[in-house]
Length: 476
Ligand code: HEC
Ligand code: HEC
Image (cartoon, protein in one colour):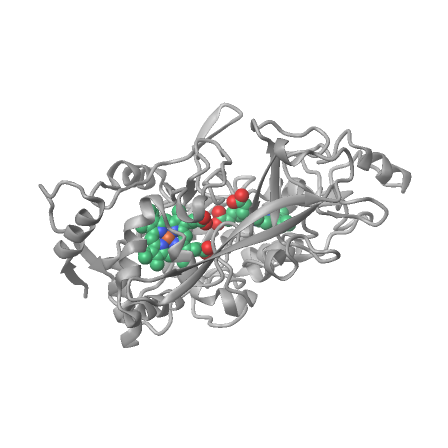
């Protein structure tokens, strides 16, 4: 059973808000999915615990289960500098296993709040991208600033975050606060890069909820959404990112700017951990003095640190993870919040329902996962790029960093499935690409640009409707 309701008034007031023309408004027929829904079809699991993201889909059995467990181990095993198995770490790195940043297949607590950056000893669980102001990379440092290093080698530098706070009020006077980060890099291992030449942007990890479903999406459905998802009365129009590699152009789906077409297994090993592989055979610090330091300590760089077969098992592990079912779907507050989600137009970007293509997905070396095919899924994302604005606190979410077609102010709609369990799985409630939001309210109140109308709607809700909307997010 589906409930339908119309939002003529909502649309009309949005129009007033943006001062647009009132002609030709049609009621948007909003379809609120009825309560209990299987998030990812047959891959849905019913866990409500810290392993809710990190458990296999119900159809993972036999040989698939063996490979899943192997991939899971490779994903979580702590890498070290030497040693024949699980070796190859560094000499510089950002994380020591995939799971070090994606703990429990989630979002490891980043240290930007607790340690004000990389922290003196701690592990940051963040990726710090650095370039010259004109976008060119620094030869001595590369694209990612590696703030960790193996024993005897110096990290490339350390991240320092300064917070600027500002107080605001909702339409009804309820106060809230936002904090905007400013980044500096300290402890450069080599030539210090002057602040006015440096450009820096920071990312906290993404949850691994629905990786297989994302890879099994039908690109034509996403492209059709981009063509159709034009809601001028809301100021919303999403667009696709495309990646061209080795002469092939593919739709970008993964990463905060949809800047990757795959699950970045090879890149993760190489760029994040310094673990060389067939796609990225060169050490990340190739040519840097760090390499020599490693050699002096007896490390050799002439072999690949992880095999293609092992990387395919990591890919398999991620794509075979189950997606947690929604919880408390019949709670009256959750129901009310769901209605508010639609009334505020959140669903125009956080699209409720998509479909996977009939054949499912194929892994790095071609292994097919037909179980992922033909599923109706509820990711709460359109996987498209949206301009999220540059105004709020004078900066907005704009990081001035271009990734493929995505500009600084453009971000991929983050899939919200599983988000309600993040606190349980990872013990923190930091959201948005750089973790600047400390709770759901702040995350919503950072939505500018195409998200501005939604933000205003949220701000104008009664306190109890805002609470209900947040209860709904906890049910995802
Ligand atoms: C240093 C921390 C760190 C390590 C180590 C790390 N990641 Fe990530 N991962 C991130 C961050 C940060 C992002 C978001 C990057 C962005 O959007 O620019 C991310 C994004 C991803 C995504 C995209 C998810 C999505 O929803 O689009 C996948 C898939 C992924 N990582 C897989 C891996 C794998 C596989 C490994 C190990 C080989 C790995 N990661 C190691 C921090 C890390
Ligand atoms: C114009 C498209 C758009 C609309 C409308 C929109 N969002 Fe978003 N949302 C995004 C994008 C893009 C991001 C990622 C921004 C970033 O990380 O900097 C995001 C991020 C979020 C996050 C943080 C996710 C995470 O894991 O870090 C939450 C929570 C969220 N949105 C909730 C909402 C709610 C609730 C509404 C309605 C009040 C809404 N959004 C309306 C596009 C939209």
